[in-house]
Length: 157
Image (cartoon, rainbow, N blue to C red; front, top):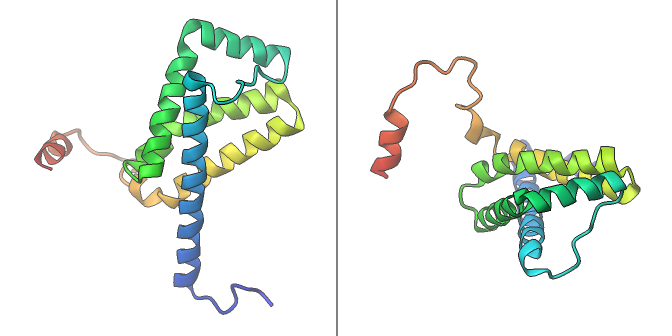
């Protein structure tokens, strides 16, 4: 028997909300720990599973870009774990997620990398779908003319 057979739409929506919150906690902790690890070194930073990814990560470290990425990961992790500006944090995580996926799928190409990339992409996508309603105005086909209304609303709060 299907465990959802007796569950109405409200029950399924509630479970989806719980799944999104659990994923948010996992994803936020993952970003926070891996971001902080760059600065505090809890564990050895993986150099990359292939020569190409090792070289790519090395270039990002030498250029200073990796420090910025890790600082953004810390911020995203803190926002997700504190339940503040979550839709913004989810969107900000997507470029990092796409780099993680690219490195793991196309540079490393090992089982661990494919799993890590898949989990990262799935978690970020699930979070985005869980907060889809928050993006509704951003996804408008025609946005209309620009105005200062949003700025004035933000300043009044």
